[in-house]
Image (cartoon, rainbow, N blue to C red; front, side):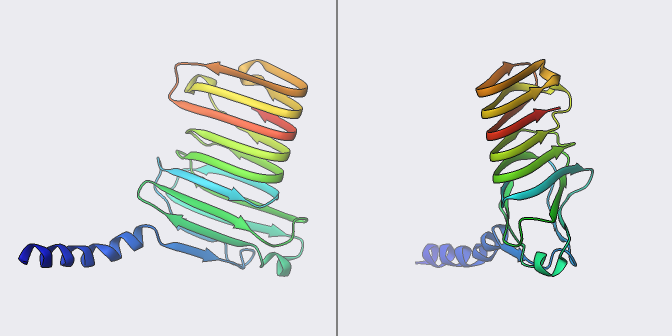
Length: 201
């Protein structure tokens, strides 16, 4: 009986902690109030982005910041950020708002493992050290790879379009273009564009 009571008490006490670790945060009106949340370096971040013009930039800090620049700030207030933190990872989604006349910048800790999915548009990643798994269905994807020796596995492909990867000595165009390389580094890179251009630089 005492063990049962003790177990229930522990479960009740730990429940708020579990909820806090996975608490969801939502924000709008980003042109006037950029979104910012603490996020330790070295963690994994999944990003689900709406179509548009995005820049994802690594910074020397422990925060995620989302900034919006728009020709029509009033309409851009409809853009919504959803963030959910777990023990050693998080999910960030950006949705809604006008597709044209808007540039969205996401700043993250430089040392972050990234998983990014985006339907269409222009997506550029720079100054990020860590695993990168990025897919863009249509448009232009630019990935700053840093030192190519930092990677143990690299796989890049386009279904139709151009594939440029100067740091790895690769240049391809046309249909179903791809390459993969193995190395002695610690990170993995996977990048794919359905229709459009992929540049690793």
